[in-house]
Image (tube, rainbow, N blue to C red; front, side, top):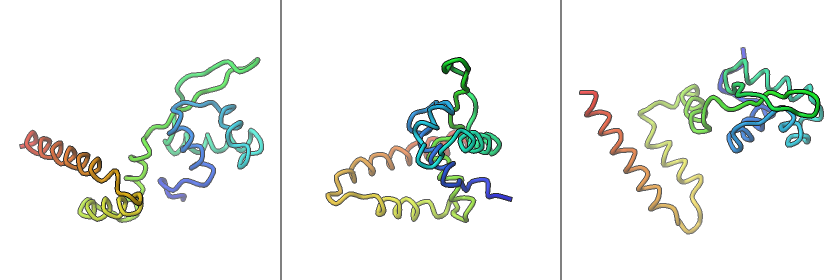
Length: 137
């Protein structure tokens, strides 16, 4: 059985587009992914696979020429997907600090321009966790 949180190359590209643009139809996907999906069959198979796995959901339809096309939206954010993927592959809560530091080191720019912003974000997360812990008591 396929790992529920391991996307194929085609699925990953579809999800990347949906995470960037929110809601797209199969026609939109075919137009934007013609390099890896040369016809509608590939698009429909990929959409059905993502629907079955719970990655995307229908969110309406739009008229396209003489027919209606379903619109799709992601069921989780890119960050939620990454978290589920990491947990599925053995990264647990006790590794959070190390993962955050590795991610920072992997994505930092040469001038460290955004270090202050990251520190402020992490401080905000810590404050939220403290508040959540106090409310659970």
